[in-house]
Image (cartoon, rainbow, N blue to C red; front, top):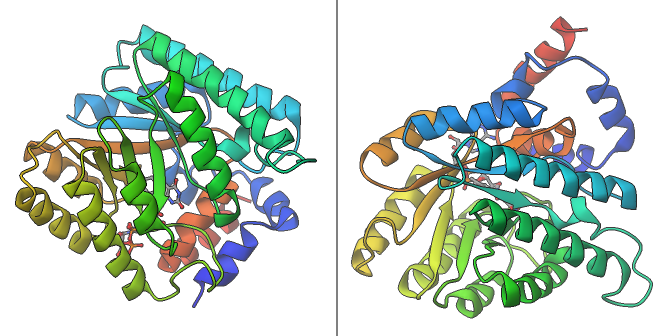
Length: 314
Ligand code: FDA
C-alpha cells in the first residue's frame, strides 16, 4: 500500500523543498491546481460557472507556524473574495478555509488558547469579507487532532455567520455522532471520506468500513434538516446518495454534490446537466505540495506521471 508512505511524505519538509524547487507547473500539479494567482483562480471559476457548475476555492497553505504567513493568507482570501465579487461570480462560488493556514497550528500555551484564538479571529475576518461579497465560507477539516478545535471555532463563527459550512470525515469513529449534532436547519455540512493518515484508535482503517460509515452519515444528514454537501468521486457513494435523497423526499437543490478540480470532470458535468447542484473545489496558490501528496495517496497510479513530470521538467 502506497497511501501510508505518501501521506507521511506529505509531512516531510525536506521532500517538500526538493519537490517544490522543481518547475512542475505544466506537469501533474496542473491537473489538480489550475494556477497560483488570484487572477488564475477567478478565470478557472468563470470557466466552471459557464459550464453550469458552482465552485469553492481554497487558497493553498496549511500548518502555518508563522503569524505573518497567517495574515498573508487572510489577505489573499479577502483579495479573492473582492475579485470574485467584481467578476459577478459570488452567487455561484464560495471559499474553503483550512484553519491551520490561518493560525490554528501556532503554539498554544493554555488549552484552547493561542493558535485557536488567532484562527478564530482570522476566520471571522474571512467570513465578514465573504458576507460583504455576498457569499459563504466552509471550514475544511484537517487531521483528528484539530477536530474539536475546528468544531468549536465553527460554533463561534455561526453565532455571527450562521451560513458558515463545516466538513466531517467518515473515516473518524466520532463522525456519525457529529453528523447528528450538525443536521439542523441552516447547517451546511460537507461529508467526505477523509484524506489524512489516522490512528486505529480514532479512525476506521479499511476502505469498506469507511464506505459503510459514509453511508450511515449520509443517512443522518439527508434525513436531517441541514444542507448536506456530498463530497466524493466514488460512483457507488454518488448512487447511494441519489437513492437516499429520493427516499427522504429531498428535492434537487436541497443538497449538493462536490468534487475536486480535475477529478471526474465528465461526471461533474453529467450530474449538473441532470439538474443537480455540483460544486467543484478549486485549490490555487504556490503551496500545493501537501494537497498534491494527498491526491497522489488516493490514486497511487498517478505517481508514475508525477515522477515523469519531475524528470522531464528538470
Ligand atoms: P475514493 O478515494 O474511494 O475514490 C473514488 C474514485 O474517485 C476513485 O476510484 C477514482 O476514480 C476517483 N479518484 C479519487 N481520488 C482521485 C485522485 N486523487 N485522482 C484521480 N481520481 C481520483 N478531506 C479531508 O480530510 N478534509 C476536507 O476538508 C476535505 N475536503 C474535500 C472537499 C471536496 C469537495 C472533496 C471532493 C473532497 C475533500 N476531501 C477532504 C478529500 C476526501 O476526504 C477524500 O480523500 C477524497 O475525496 C477521495 O475520496 P472519494 O470519496 O473520492 O473516494
